[in-house]
Image (cartoon, rainbow, N blue to C red; front, side, top):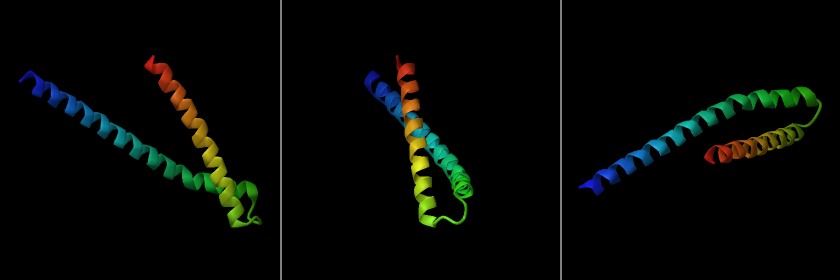
Length: 84
């Protein structure tokens, strides 16, 4: 009987962890979409309208990728420090 209660508690804990992860991911996606237009507009502003659209998209993709990589490294380091 104790094992089934323990198993149920562990299952509930896993469900809460996964739902929390999904909610946090959803907020991250919403934030990314909110910044999407802002970053595109900034790139267009700094490149000017005379450049090709493809050039602007490439610069945008590179900038976003660099930001994502730096943020991932920073978050991973903070996470590792908090674990121990």
